[in-house]
Structures are given as structure tokens and as C-alpha cells.
Image (cartoon, rainbow, N blue to C red; front, side):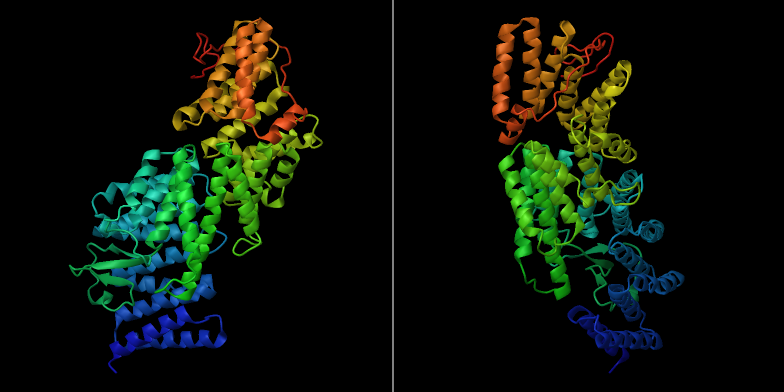
Length: 611
């Protein structure tokens, strides 16, 4: 048999054994190692460089399955050889492989090694004019930054996105493959991470992914290619076991494997929904994602791919289906859809004892958090406190956890703080300790929602300070909440702080300022639309109007209160009626804070609220 034919046969045989057999079995593992070793020796003797690099590529993938470090280390020598002899197409293939393997190590993100490889690829691509490779590299760099835990990860991700965008229009969507979609996903995800939604980007992504005429992107099997525009591989990319393809112009295309088209569409709906979570469209997108993930997970057999890959895809869909349901539950909470929240919790509680969710802290954490939010919304504060106090939701030390784990732990801790700040609560003495745990992680958090939530809680915590200090703190908090509302149309923070402002400083006062303040709070509560803040603001109006002798206005406010009160959860109404909640009262001191009836800026500029 000619050497080339023998080498092709050995390569295919080794690939099939890795894909179709249990590589952890000692006899199988030894056999695979023997085949690959003989293959590399055969290719070396007969100078079959394309098949040799393909065998080294396969060997690294195989070794990584059983020993991550060995798999990554095995690529160093082939990369050095390809660099020395300027086999640039193989430099791209081997370095991209090292990046993707590094990102698959569970439990942590190998940021520095991955970035080193990507920067090396960028250097070659920029010098040689391989624009699609450069854009693909920038997209992966943005993803690496987004997954890391460093303080400036989001700024670094945005810089990588900007670098990719600078060349993206110079290549066709077909030449770029699914990296165009990946870039859009990372761009939107960065906005979600900072709390800066962009509905236009989200809607454009959904429209793009549903375009049936699109030629670019992932195939039904999940593979796609990226054009190597200038660095011609020649005979070095002739027989590569599927690592390269030749297009109609005989140019090389590097093959990548990602998500099949149906899974990619579901992921796009999921990310777009997170971006649009404040609006009904966000719930529509997330329900669509949930439906697609569920249908994909039901497919227990996927033809044309190795069994291990098929099982991994099914598990991936199950995981994303969990997170889509978790997101639906949170969105339903914010929309006061308590029936949906209850249904989601029931389903997640059924699943938590099944694989792949069983004994996994990430799923335990999300279920407990949603349970605590639901309980707190319904007035079951003891249940909420218990759910949010589990070990999986403890506040980690700075830099010792992933951003996702840290963020959900911070949110749970902030909610615990709101519960135990009641002076009559048995755990009230721990509020300062918990606040100091939260502060270094939340004070300058990259997400403006979480940062603003912390500022609100910090304002509530500062009631023992001098009145002048409290006034300045409230002013800053109002300004921050207003900025969030202007940028995102999320006015709930502003409704909260205005209701607190009135209850804290004008609960017993009489005068024009008191009426102006309560009207400003009412304006923000109406804009927010949530019954709880409408009820709070209406109750404040009733008390203020009665103190001023405005009987007709007080009666109108009573009707507003009763309307909002009826929309509150039964459990919450029962707690309030039973005196389970501590009232926030003012301490009777005069505060010179000016705000007019519409929340406009007064001449002295004390409070700057846009109605």
C-alpha cells in the first residue's frame, strides 16, 4: 500500500477508535497511542506533512480527554515546528485548537494561556491579511475576557469586539462562518453583564438567526468554516482528516465545530431575552428559547456524530433549558406573574434530583435564589431568609469565585439584609457584618443594576448617621437611580428611593414640600407600574393629604391604594395586615430637600428627579 494511503487509513482508524470506543479502558488507550505513534513516524519518514500535522492535532485532542495538561503540552512542539517553517495555516489550526481546549477545562478559565495563543494568531493574521481569521480571533478573545474574573473583563471584551468590528465589514458572512453570530452574542452578553441593554441589537440578532436564506453560520451538524484568505497551505492542507477544506477557488478554509443551527437559534433567543428582560418581548423570547431547548433535549439520538458528542449536546440543552426556566421565573417575579413563578419553581424542584442537575451547586444555587425571591415577594420572610442563607449562596471572598456565582450570592445577601434590618428581627445584630461582606464586591460592581441596588441598601443602612449626611446620601442615590431609569427605562429603583425618601423625611411633616415630595413619589410609582410601589405611594399620599386637610384628594388616594392593594399577593397582604412588617417612620427632624410635584429640579438643586 502506498505510504499516503496507509497514513490516511491509519488516521481514519484512530479517529474512529477515539470517537466510538471507551478511551479510558487501558487496552483501548494503549492501542490508540500505538496507532498514533506509528502514524506520526510513518508520515515523518515519507514527508507527509499534512497527515503528520493532522495526526498531531488528533493526538492532542485525544490526550486532552484523559489529561488536560498533557493534551495542551503536546501542542507546543508542533506549533514551534509550524512557526519555524512558516506553515501558517497549521499555525492557525494548532493555536486555535490550544485555545478551545484551554477553554474546556472545567472549573476555571485559562485566561493567560488562551490570550497568548490568540495574540499570536492575531499577529500572523494582521501581517498576512487573513482578515476573517483576525475577526474570528477577536471574537474568541472577547469571549475569553467575558468568561474571566478580572476586574476589567468587560472593558477588555468591548475592546476585542471593537477590533473585530473594524474588519468585519471587509469580509463576507460566509467567509466568517458562525463567528459573526458569536460576536453579536458576546456583544449583547456584555451589555447584559453591565446592565446596559440594547433592544435594537437583540431584535436584529433574532431577525438574523431566523433568516432562512442566510448562507453563513453553523450547519445542522454544527460545523462551519473560516476562510484563510492569503496564507495558502498548498499540499500541506491536502489530507487533514477534516481540519481544512478547499473552497471553489482552491483556497483553504479552517473547519470549526460549534452549535448546530437549531441550538444556535435557541441560544440567540435566550441571550436576546436577557437583554430585553424588562419588556414583554423578553418573556416571549425566553419562552421561545425554553421551548427550543426542551425539544432539542428530547432528541435522545442524534445521527451523524459520535455518541459522546451527541450526549454532550443533549446535556447542554438540558442545562440551558434549566437556565431559561430560571430566567422565566425571575422575569415573572418582576412582572408580578405569581402563577408562572409557582409553576417554574414546581418544575425546577422536580428536576433538581435528576442528572445533570443533581448535586451540582450551580443548580442548587439558582433554585434557592428563585425560591427566596418568590417567598419574599409573597411576604414569607422566614422562608425567604432560609432559602437565601444556604451555603451555596454565601458571599465569596473577592476574586475567589466566578462572576456568575458572585453576582447571585450578592443579590441573595442584599435581600437577606433587607429582611434582617428590621430592629425586631432576631438576626438584626448581624446586619453590619453582612453589609461589610457585601460592600467590597458590590460598591463598584460592573453591573449598574447591582451597583444601584447596593447604593439603595447602603442608604437604608445609614439611618443612624447625621441628617445632613443622610440627605446627601439620598441625593446621590436619587441621581444614580434616575440615570439607570433614563438609560434602561427601569424606573423601579427610582420608585423605591422616592418612596423611602418621603417615608423617611416627610412622614409627619406639614407644608408644601411634603405635598410636592409625595406627588413625586407617586409619579415614579405610576411610571414603574408595579402594584407594590403604587400601593406604597398611594398610602403615603393618603396620610399626607389627611394631615393637610385635603379630604377629596385623600379619598381619591384611598381608591388608588385599594386598587393597587388588590393586585398584591395574598400572602403579602396578610403579613402587612397582621403587622408583620416594620413601618418606616421619620425621626421628626427638618430636612431641607426641595422637590416639586413632578419631580423636577428646584432652584436650589437639592433633589434632581425627572418625573
